[in-house]
Image (cartoon, rainbow, N blue to C red):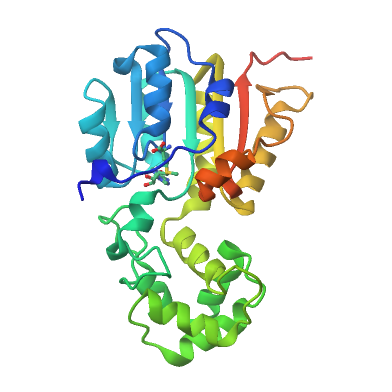
Length: 296
Ligand SMILES: C[S@@+](CC[C@H](N)C(=O)[O-])C[C@H]1O[C@@H](n2cnc3c(N)ncnc32)[C@H](O)[C@@H]1O
């Protein structure tokens, strides 16, 4: 299947458009452009593809974007380094969107190792040019460090027990073996697979996702014009906590608020959307507009 045919349904699309309010000729930075679903809708509203910069650290996604958005600038690198580079150029944007995490491209390709339902290598890199893989963390890292990943990146309460169990059966060859090793020591509760948090933790650690987000948020404010809009969609509580705390700190009515919140509470998907796209169930959208700092 051609990569451009992979079906990724953009989450909370209407709500993103309502927050970003794209208008004719405006500039747009999509830091996680993926298959370009959100980008297509924003660019259709601005009618200014040449003023759009689309970033994705996955070279396959970047190829899809180059094919779909011939007039836009495509950057195939992680959003922290892309944002730093853009800051150096002095460019400013009317809208910035971050739709965090992985895309269908990752989950559907078992060779990428993101899914515990299909056998694949312990990889989980969004950017295959990167050195660190899930294999190294699972098979080479000391037990305490592995437990730290499960706890800090997966909020896994039984991190120590799981890391003991994994270390005892090393080497673990693939995703299915990993899921089975976790399942042997974790009771199944409800519909959630016992290895869900372990896989999430490894993916976040491999791609350094929390650090990327923490360090990029302040740069995104810098990259916005006054009255520019920032929208961030997160898919788990670790990410959402970072976004929430950051937006609150920058919009507090103290000396130097430089953001005004557009969402007091996060926007979540309607049941109709979740029916069509179950991935939308955990999505939380937060947005803000950049304002002039008023010293009080
Ligand atoms: C949820 S998908 C985005 C889907 C996109 N909004 C669409 O409508 O097609 C997230 C994308 O962001 C990319 N990504 C995640 N973290 C990134 C980072 N730190 N830097 C650059 N790209 C990243 C992933 O490779 C993935 O393609």
